[in-house]
Image 1 (cartoon, rainbow, N blue to C red):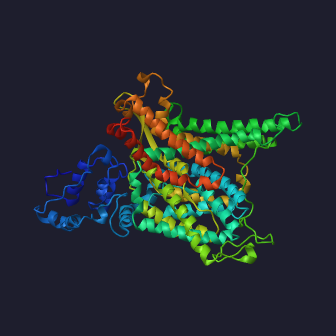
Image 2: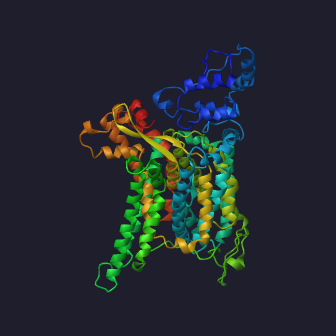
Image 3: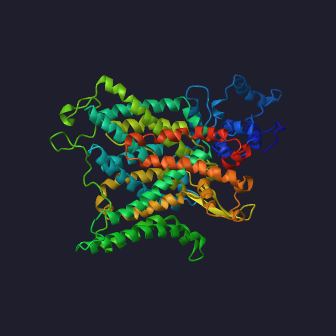
Length: 633
């Protein structure tokens, strides 16, 4: 590339060169070179203008890009004339906006997302089958199909219990599948997986109880809730409000990521423990006790061995046995092979009666018409049907009242969507294509939420662990030595495409017709998969690494991470304690049985960036500005 002083040659090269030199490596956008070449403009190199989250703490100012002088001759002066005028007015060209930068104009961020992603749309489909990526793509589809099916069934059963069968398993599977198909075609970050989540379940329970207390048709009221939520989400996308997420530093991202991993790990062990608690005769003298003990013991073995086998397959490429192709096959299809292997073993011991996956026999709505026992129609009348539901139709006042719970639902969707996408787009993951935060929310607002409302389906949001598992299934990692001689694993490539997202959710929809086969899969085997997903999502989370330091009493034996060498022990451990305390509060909120309290969960997440700013300022003697930058960069 030419230097900044040279004016001959390609204008785009000169512009990009200056920005590459000034801004090497942005956390929120690492694909400057690739996308700028695709657009053939200086556009997407403008990621550098995002505010530095540490500017206030370090006393530094965000850097600005030097303008091309008007004296430059010929093509350079002509090309920069209009952009220079816009900069003088305080606004950058749309094409130069970063993914999380306020544009200062209507739908500016959305238009920047489209400029960034549309030129890459064809490669989003072809990349799955080029460069030797076909094996990794198909393996990811198989793994994530089971990883998404089991939560859909689990949450579907929970929805049915909480709403008296107004929502159920069939609706949850259709909702997940339908959302995924739409998202695979239209989203800006197709590595993100949508699905039912715990906070969404809590919100649904609260809204159902409100409708019951006011004797209003629940499904009809949900249509208006969906429309209000859709309106709020669209407004957020059009007015660049996703740019507010740039205040989220690693502190918030890692608390959220660690929390979801813990939920999956604890959920897996809970499934195994329930085998010993579900049958009261496991430890008694009843004749059925030996059979119950056998069921619990076999279920525990199946779940744990599913996890250990999947982990063994994941590490198989580092071994020397067999050929490189076989090692690659075992590593890519390890989770799927584990599920098939231990489901087959369970079928051989089917007399033990280990609980298996519950799938609906018919593709009909779970809710029934009042007093008839017949299933309702798929389309939900937003004005209700007193004869069918037995409840009052939503009045004008109630329709406007639903805007309040819809706003909370929109906040939940905003946080889930953006925090998960932030985690996916982290610089550590070495992605070559940029994010599109505003576009992702617009897709949810225009398509996902209204369809879920009108067809009586649970709302879907970005599912963090499933999304991270999707990302990791498409990664290629290599071990290397850092400057301290310690072995570290770095991502060298990610297959960034839309085919896996589409394939996963098409299989989810097809699963509705494969219930006879899927009901042979033990729940404990899928619990082992959950344990695998939770554990494999933890490496790279600095909070997790710093917690392990508490068990090493000799500081000389600490792993030589950058923050370990730059921060003294006391502020290092106090920052870990501060972050872990926030994590503990969040986890406690997920375990509160009262849904009216558990709905606080997303709002506490929203306050984490503010807590991160305020607490260090209240204790300036504990953490210096340099400490905070090293620990939270």
